[in-house]
Image (tube, rainbow over all chains, first blue to last red; front, side, top):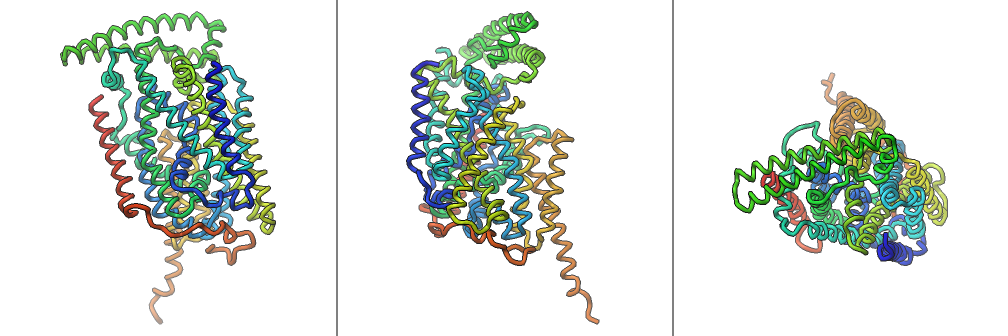
Length: 571
Length: 58
């Protein structure tokens, strides 16, 4: 990395963190630490909500996902705008009306302490693990590509986040996220412009999209009703809706963002702002990945995008196999170039038959490229077992490092680190809040002073930060980082959402019944995950539906018992 | 209110958040219903656009 890139990176990160610390120094009491004095306006809330969800994984993994799997991942977000509307109508007024610090307090007001702490515990488990992955994801990729130490990268990201979350609390998180989100969106827009500009001059933007479509990457919407397909319109609009409802409605890392609003109006508008912008933002990120894919149709592609794993194979006794695969890849690449030239020529001549024939040749060459890369993946997995042969997360960063001009590399690294910090900061403050409010203050020290609680909140936030860094430093490579986070969330979110829906609408359900329903549902979801191939988005629907159904049955049974005497005929 | 617990013990959620800035809830423009329709219409328009792109570039 060049000096100018270092300068851009350090100035961007340093300025944002320093601004956050300075602007929110010395919180006076627990309320101002936990909810920032309820001062945020809707643009800040909207950007903070988006920045919380957009982790570094979003910017590293998503373009790589589009590179290998096309645009279909976009459908995952189709349920989100719908969820924002429902949350604005049903959830936000209830949270405001009950004056809660955490979402889980509401469950005690409706049911009992046990149910509240069960939901809070499920949140702490899944969000605590996710916080580690949120730090680990960029650290493993950046350390591999840039040669940085993995442990040091984890510690550096964690230390910066702990610094401003512990000193400034929720308001520091919101203030920094506003600027981080601007850097993230600006950086991705720059990356999009650069990748399109780096295409060969004879390839127009329209032709580039056409080539992506020919090679199956413009598979944005799939209306087929297949349950085993991870991303379809139906799983996105239903499973994605339930996941978004659970994440934004019951995950404290998001709930705290909009509960820090100046008024209920500001909170609602912030959520709806997210509902308007989220899908286009994800489209942009995925489309950058597709354009990187098109770019690589004209430039020699690494046979495997993780340079460290490739170097390990080269140094192993199986280096000869790798060289043979690279020769095959060069041959296929030359064949693909010729096919693409024929395809372009046929398009210029407007010869539909020749266009179809050349497109078939391009697809065949692409299938051969994929086959060679698959063999390389298997070779890497066999030679470097901890790598598991997955290079999706290295696709975008590899493009950035090799093709972006001086200065912009630093900007894109700032995007990735801003994203890591923004989502981690929300997670840590939420974990600290929940530990304090739902466990410490509720069960251990209910009558301590405000100053004492402020200190405990800061210590809890810092402790979760240290735990997340330790987990990140010890974590091993998982299949695909963004999917790992979403699968982990989906295992718990459905159950938690079910608890809230029963709290809102199950008037006759008692605490014991909903608690048992939650335990049974969580066990069922984990069983489904372990024993079937059902796409993970459906876990949210299953968990939620089971809690509602089991609680509903108990409510009906209870209703039947309670009304029975009135219905008995008079003697 | 809790249904099973007779009364919330000390430290229960009633001690929760500080007084809100305001509970007043009127959008700064149009009506809530109109804003919800805009958000959902934007989603529908995007799905239609993406479906068209999928069909065109198949």
